[in-house]
Length: 410
Image (cartoon, rainbow, N blue to C red; front, side, top):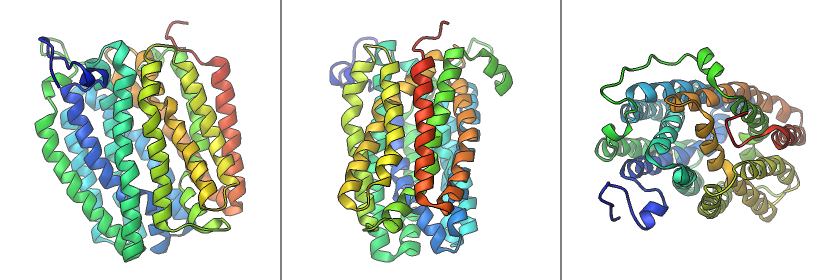
């Protein structure tokens, strides 16, 4: 990766927005992400196997959204205050503690307790990483930078469920998932070591030594500084995430238990791989286009795909129709990096990470209601769950088509 005299990458590395600090973060994303995905998609099965029942599955999904919201806001505020490197290390250690709880205590209550810790890494890393990309890269490379982050995240998402499915099929649900969490613990430890070497703290710390540090931003005051265009995007995104999260934790139950011709754990892992590979194929061409044009059309198409997925899943009752459904699910990533870049562009200056975290705090707190309600809708009937999700997605798509904006100015 050759450098210019000013230290920037040239050639392919420049096209892919691979500055040094970003490369360091991407290395962590692969290691920690692979550990997470080895078992995360199968946790609903593990909870049921441990006697938690369907309500524990809804509780896990709601807990995921609720904690992600809280961690996102405080993670963004801490990144603006302390810098990305120290924040990432702290939350990596907390994730390792959560893995240990699940490994050592095979009870569904312990899984939920451990989740409080190991769900934290993704939440803390996202606002900090997005703010890093915004600072390091010029405006015409930011969607590419976010896309590289999203693309890299999908590599472990594609591999992890397949490896986890193989472990479960070979060892059984309970033993297989504990083995997967043991591997996750080792990968997180390696990531903690590598991040101290690869990520440059002085390139990430947001405040220059001569500038006074701002106090941690409160959500109320920061909300007042968000532009109306960002608030309208937030409302649309909340409705779309209702569409996603109402059935999210139950997709594995639909595929492996509810349909006419259920699939195996390995086959479900392959379906997840199909989803991730589809996403990988669309990231770079869409990023190149989005950096050179308006962002709203890409976000709007993504919202429409979110809306269609539960409806297509409803009519998919065997493996090959499910392949088509998961291809569609992968296509929903078409405009997700663009949406994240748009959030940062619309956010107030010098508060990018905190504003990004506030956006996710508000979104995921509201959406956690959908995650909890998903269990109740599923208990009525799986089709009720999927159709309710579709209605929510349609509302969000139509709202953004009407009120969505690319620019901050009103």
